[in-house]
Each structure stands twice: as C-alpha cells, then as structure tokens.
Length: 114
Image (cartoon, rainbow, N blue to C red; front, side, top):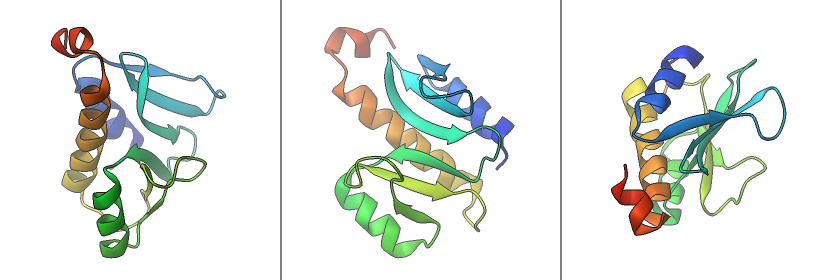
C-alpha cells in the first residue's frame, strides 16, 4: 500500500479528517478530533494504529512488521511497518479497527452523527 491509497482509505471512513498537529511531516487522521492513525508523509515507512490490548499482543506475535507503538502508549497502539509483507486488506482491517475503537469511545451524540 502506498501513501495515496492509505490516505484515501482513511478519508473514506465516516467523519475522518486530517491534521498536522505535531509537525509538517506527521499526518494524523482523526475522527471527531480523536486520533486513529498517524504516519510520516515524506517517508511512509510505518503507521501507528490504535488496537485492542489483547489483539495487539497477538498481532505482534504473529507479524514481525507489527511492533509496540513508537512514541505512543505501547499497550494501546501498534506501529505497523509498511516495508514488510503485510497485505493491503490486513492494513485496511487494522486501520478500520483503530477507527472503530476511537468511535466507540466518543460521546453518543458524536457517534450517532457519523
């Protein structure tokens, strides 16, 4: 998956928006102001995605491309290498999982508006 395909997928999710809150290279995808994915737009070597803690451990054990979240809460975030052999469908599934975890924590009114 390249940066354009990843960008288009993230922006296709209901209520998704983009932001550069940290610097001009770190693209952050949000839903209702809450982060669900981030990546370096210049290099696109990896993406950080929120993940259920139990599933995060399982994924890290199953795929060498998935590590504890770099500069993130290691319990709730994974860093997914884009340079490995992960299929696009898995990357989309993990991104959707991250998005859904964030949406589930939104206030009910915000969830309903999606």
